[in-house]
Length: 219
Image (tube, rainbow, N blue to C red; front, side, top):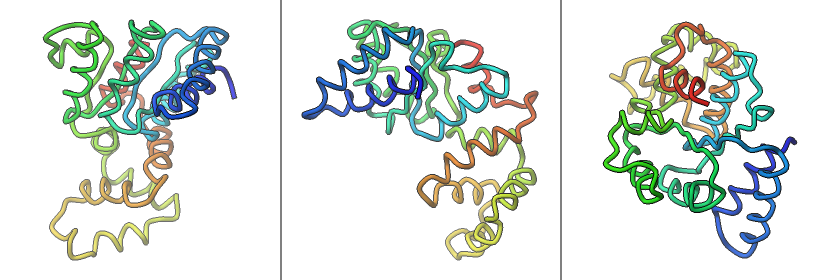
């Protein structure tokens, strides 16, 4: 594991608090200083981290080698703690991020409280390097790739039968295929991250979801 990976693990433990927080904080500082940490990208979950890193790799970039650590928050409501630890009042590292539009308020409040901007709008967040997905990243990828391509990916993963079973459930009838696909990706632990990797691999780079494209250009 490189220094950016060690930093990510340490800062997540540090943010969680508890008995090991002080030790985790020291580990995060050590990894940050020793590895040349340049930017911390805050994303809501592990699947977002996978997608950002996978897309960077498709562009021939190794974010870790560039001093960029993509850190999953474990939920948007935790963003304030990470901004406090990594931002001007903590490690004072350059911040960027990706979030769902519905969770914008948590990011905006955390940044404003840390003194990073004031009266922030969506455009203001983007100027700081924080980009909004309309619903979430899975929705962005579904719209960019299209239902046919994604169903092909599902088949390649050996899960088409399970997907058809979900489609035929009474509660899902009347939904669009896109809604079925979005639901399917969230039905099992680890499936979002699995499909984040596979969908980015199948993506036509000319149709990259705008929030992802802008985030990578920013960092």
